[in-house]
Image (cartoon, rainbow, N blue to C red; front, top):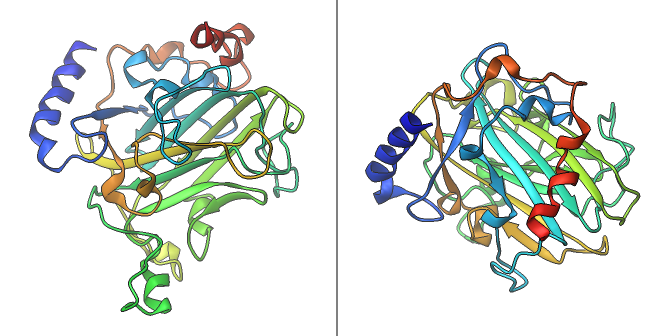
Amino acid sequence: MKKFALIAGAILVSTTCWAHLPEGLVRPAVHFPSGHLPIIDSDLSDWDVVTDPYLITHEDLTETVTGLGTQRDAADLALRAYVGWSPETNKIYIMEDRWDDAVWVGDHSWENAKGSGCSGNARDFLEIQIDGDHSGGQFNSWRDESLTQEEKDILHGQQAQGYGLRPNGRYAWHKTYEHALPPFGDAAFTCTNDPGEPGNFYAEYMYTPWNDLRWTDVPNSVQHILTEGEIFGFNFTVLDSDTGGGYDGYWTLSGDTNSCHHADFLSDFFLSPVDPDIDWASQARPGTAVEEKTWGHIKATFAE
């Protein structure tokens, strides 16, 4: 990983003048080579080969609404996550492996549902924002009265996009969620608990980045072409609810609540080259996960 560290360091120096949040930090997105793409099925075993330099945990999150800030408690919420990409599919991939003392995510009515064991009140969901060309700018929640509602509708999600889960399944913060569905996007999740009980939440997400997304004509909108060495804007937020009614924590990766509607407040991610330190030949495929490797067993190391 030494070679990659040098590359990332050079990019960090050259981009500090226009970096997003946290300032001065560029995180790597792991490059999935051909034949080793993650399958969006909530079986996280195909991520096991990814190494620690790509790891994101709850220790990287900041609570920005209720006042907790960096007062993290792994006994309440423990997270392991990765962000990846593929030039073959032109997709951003996200893996979420979470333990929560009260899980309120998902719904059994999701058409062709891939999730299981999840509750019907989607409160503890992950919100995801992607700015493929790192252009910044507002993409949601305009208060400018000089804009008509029609103009706001056109701008909503046009140059950066937001995604998540809702009671009816996959979701996008726009007038349509066509681009959150195959072939443009997908998500899958699994829970190990009854509603509101302690348990694990496993999820995988896959999204296309867009430079000019028109919700009236998604197939003919302009995709951003992911290119090795580029920086893209990205954020995710864990909305943690202990009761299923509202949330008790708004845990952001960027550290700013405004990331939900303005791409200037996203984090910087680097589209890394294929990492020679990752043993892709040993990558597990779905259905071969080893139980003792699950996050439910290793989250205790954060709580101790």
